[in-house]
Length: 206
Image (cartoon, rainbow, N blue to C red; front, top):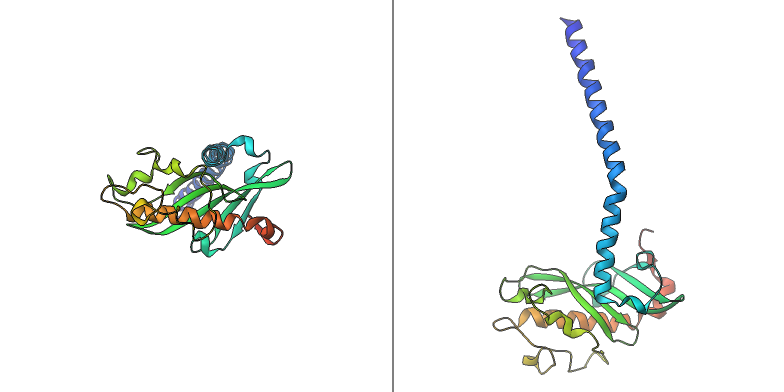
């Protein structure tokens, strides 16, 4: 009886070890493919907010972590675009905390003069059919930031039309576009301070 139990126990142990080893091997084999796909997806998103002819460095290797109220609570990633080692623009992760249904996550490309090069929403919980028009797949509204410059924090152009600004609001939904406009404005103003901060910023992964 004990021999049988011992035999089954050894068999189960060998089976578990083999399964664990196989899982580890498969994970190792697929990890590089998964990483490559993630990098391609990130690059495709970057290309939507920052034209590729504006820089010639690897953005993923020029990533910094910042804690800036202008970008929202918590830590955000900032990617510095360089042209021949000269910082020329940035892609910033930003949060609009005051969306109608919660925080709206954004990616904002902007040069250091405060000109927005592109903006995309990466996550939101806004009402379908109303606030979700901030998504590019549903509306081109988010593309209207491109080429706009933020002069100062009091720039009246940077508001929805209902508040006297230049940006359309959505029928039945003003809170969502207002939140996005304000978040992009704050990100653009913050970007203008980045060149002086670069020596003190912590690189991602440190």
